[in-house]
Image (cartoon, rainbow, N blue to C red):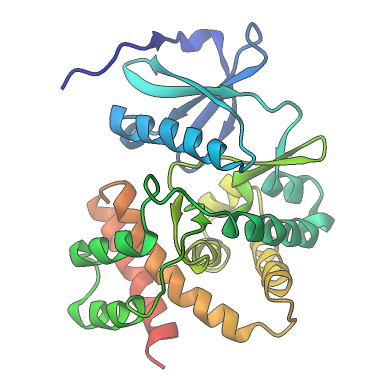
Length: 289
C-alpha cells in the first residue's frame, strides 16, 4: 500500500529532551514552538503514527487539554509527529523527582484530573470500547492458561460499558504542567470504558513494575515514591483512607491491562513470558480468593 508523502526531518538539527516507554522527543532551536516525537521502532509504522495523529485530533475536539497536533513527518524512514511545544513543562513524575515532598500532592492531582477525563463523553463512533478490545485480546492471549483465562473472562463479562473516555496509559508521566495549566499527552490508546481500566494500569506500574530499575529510571521515581504515589492516589480517588477493596479491584484490572497491551503491539516471545509470569501472580493474588 502506498502512503502519503511527508516532510523529511533531519534529526541532526534536533536534540533529545525526553524519553518514555514508547519513544523519544526532540526540540529544534530554530523551531522553538514545536516538538518532534519519534516512537520506538514497533510503534513508528504508518498505521501506528497515523492512529496517534488522528486520536490526538479527536481528543482535542472533545475539549480535553492536550498539545495541538500539527503534522506527521518522516525521520530516517520512520513516521513521526510534530506537535505544539508546551514550554517550561514538567510531567507529574518529573515534579515528584525534582521535589519528592510533593509526591502525594501530584498523586492527588492525577486523581482530580483523571476524574475529569473519566467524566468526558467520548465520540463512540471514533473511539473503541476498551471492554471489547479486552475480550478480543483475551482470545489470543496464549500466555494465559486456559483455567486462568476462564477466571479472567468471567470477571471481564461483569464489566459494564461506559461511554466516557479512558486514557490507556494513565500514569504520572502522561500529564504535564506548564504555568499552572495541565495537558494530557501520549493519547494513542484513548478509548471509552470503565475508568478502572486506567486505574488498573496505574496499579500495575506502582506495584508490579515499580521494583524494576528500568521503570524507576523512566519515571524518575524510587520504589518508595511509587508506593506513596499509589496510596495517596487511592485515598484521593476514593475519598477513603482505607482503600483495600479499591486496591483489590485495581489488582484485577491490572491483570486485564497486561492483556490489553497486546492490542497495541504484538508482543515478542520474551514479552509473552513476562506478561504470563505477572498475570499468573495477579490471578493468584486477586482472582483466586
